[in-house]
Length: 354
Figure 1: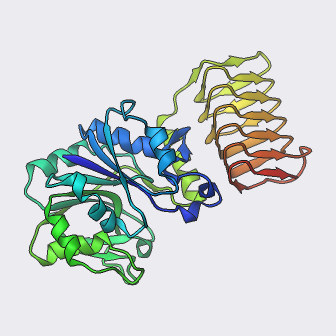
Figure 2 (figure 1 turned 120 degrees about the horizontal axis):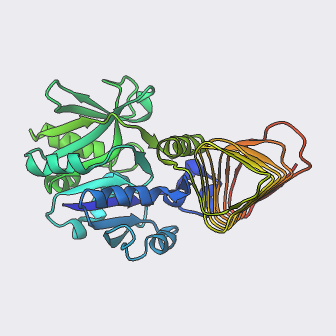
Figure 3 (figure 1 turned 90 degrees about the vertical axis):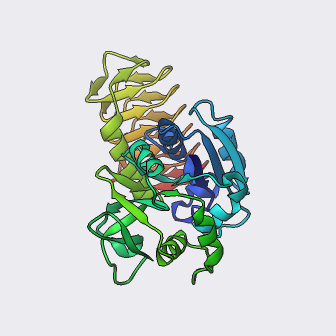
């Protein structure tokens, strides 16, 4: 089975971060979202992986993934010139996929489940497609599936006004080669894209079996700032382990699960986990509260921070309270230590003085 990871798209909902960075490389718990996806595929023994990239962010993604050996995969790079929909991405990837069954995985989605069991079930079965689903509170915002009592999909609807269920497609799909003919048979939707839901519906209309599995673990769409912060919270809560490879002085207090990387210095500060702090950071006279990720080379002085994602090489100085914030690489936020809570979303190399 081959893998197809979709890492194109403009990430408009995550701007300003995505003005200068690929949304798939935005970190959650100090790890780019895309890396979670590749590790999940490798754990399922899916090692031959096509990665669909866009012209503007493709170089950064290729540099981050490298030769794939870190993740145990062999990447093939597939350029999608324009964002024409998920089914269009499959169409562009056809020379790589050939006639192999494959798993398609959206590169900006996080799920708490391993795909190993689902991949094995699909390989051993006869269904033409299998989709993973998760109940949601706002089904009109997603692609939705209606499923019968045998776990077979009856129909799919993209962002329906009148949803037939609350089961949303989570962005992991298993396909056999018949999906290619289905994609060739559909037309662009009203928004001008080839929808994968339309292609799967074509399979259903032609009498093919499409199976569904509902995952019990968490699923996080990281398309917006608040979604990304929620993902950071969930991943830290479920994976953060206490570890201290840095230097923490006697005047500092570490509470709960706090992971401090090599080269980081903590002086006269209090850190309450779950928190992850990358290498070569400097934390002085500050408080870092739960659900905060601090990227490599960041300096925090005389400030209080919680429920935030700070990317690499940030500087936070004299900020009385920073929370619910996403700060891009090289971001600089400084003030006089007074004032109420700040909630910021800053792109790379931004500066804010308060």
